[in-house]
Image (tube, rainbow, N blue to C red; front, side):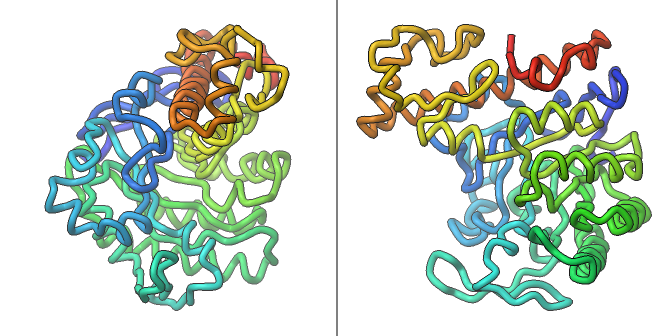
Length: 367
């Protein structure tokens, strides 16, 4: 058995489930904090666990460049290397390939690119990507794909999607199947319904442990994203986890859960925290604002995280404006906790059967 997914309850299209892996269980819907370079920025592993996170995301592209997959393998794998004993999902590098448009060349066999660090030339193939993820010992491996930009015409989107399907077969063939580990396919096709359907059906013929929806959160906007989910999700089998890659804002997550998505990741809570933005019940605040200089209240009255239990807006305002490292730590801690509390609330409402009693906006008020 690879990984195991069990749906515990459902409410409309929303599902409350559990994914079992070799490094523990993941309650879904789940949000994965991003630990691109074997660290969730500004956070200790224990701090990430304290927020309620059960899985984090690492990145094949960045880790192959520095320190190198062989270094991590020789030191016992990514879990031991970064002292994280819970599940890890690794992105295959497809998104970075898209973002390196000026430094890469796509061929039928893979992608030739120059490192953004030192210019050194690399050639990343599906087999190589899967091998790197195996050496990292990630619990959930992602296939190597081409993440297409937006906007894009139908002709290029189809060509890209069909190349990703070829790479999906090669990725599955290269995967080391073993207990507690799985590999996810990635559905591509940009915003085109016919291409998404072809991609989803072809990936399911190959057979994967879960199915991701890629190529969104790249500038298409909230409504267009929901439109794509509306016509894509019905084509995905209901007995496997569904993962919406790179999403996103709380309102995006809520709307996607209501449409049947189980897993999410995004750099937004950590990046925003370092920049002085906090996700609070009902919106976002910029802690740098002058009005917080004498504000003795916590970031969010409804939050019970370490930051909100111990520090005021005034202190956080001082830390961030002084560029103190502790400011980034405390703001990031709160933001990840906000996201984890949001997921917990969504799981509870699915269990109670009352998720659709609330508007998406009402659900951003985390209790």
